[in-house]
Amino acid sequence: MVSVIVCTYNREKYLGRCLQHLADQRISPKAYEILIIDNKSTDSTASIAETFITDNEKLNTKYYLEQEQGHTFARNRGIKEAKGEILTFIDDDAFVRSDFIENIQTYFDTNHHVQAIGGKIVPVYEEEEPKWMSKYLLTLVSAIDLGDKPKEFKGNKFPIGANMSFREKVFQQYGSFNTELGRRAGGLEGGDEKEMFLRLKKNNELIHYVPNVEVAHIIPEKRTQKEYIKGLGIGVGSSEMKRLKHSTITEKLKKFLDEGIKIGGTFVLFFIYLFKGRFSAASMLVKFRLWVLKGLLKKA
Image 1 (tube, rainbow, N blue to C red):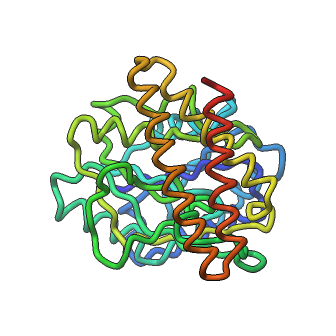
Image 2 (image 1 turned 45 degrees about the horizontal axis):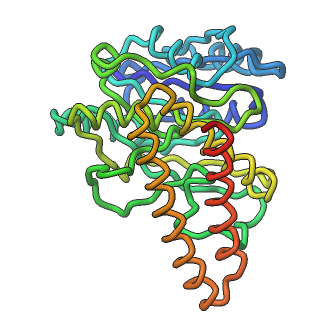
């Protein structure tokens, strides 16, 4: 069985549609459960969940209120309450295809050595795509597209939290998400899923990209504005230093060396995009990398 965990915080605008897409699966309702983890929302999240459960009695749906504020606390509550052999996490503003759960089951059933997967995430802009967007910044809107064939996430590549699935035994063996990381209320820090995937990679566990496990992810105009991206960049940097808090000096120095290499690569891309006449894309690449560096230095 697949346990689909929807962690939600003040997303009354999208939550109902997110849940309805999960209800409209072509696979039997007995094949999955839906866990709604409310992370102390102050809007109508609870009543939306209650109405959904009442209107979809054939579905195995449960609602839980997680009092500890923070995305990782909500995710860990989902892990605790889940009954499935596969645990899937999607965002409350992500909409799945009708074959979503079936494709997750099939991939894990036919790839016994794979312990976690991440699917394709297609951005759906409420307004228009920002002029600064490039394939190198897709992760800023939680989007990912590595092609139309399954492949291993190698090196520093890993799934995005809006669409990721694990075998349940992963959490038994390696523990739950690190509660020192992740977003809290309106904050923009993260890094909790990255830290989990790095744990798996250090133990040589296989993590695959599976393109037919696809979601559409809503991107409000606010998430494309400069101030939001600036906050996100600083949050990425400070989250990395939190993740490395208990690491050795050598490991921290390696992080700054890696960041230096990224900055060098970013300036190369800057001139490439500048040559193509895409000044906004060129400028944002540099600004974001410098904001990440600011976050790193802030927490160093």
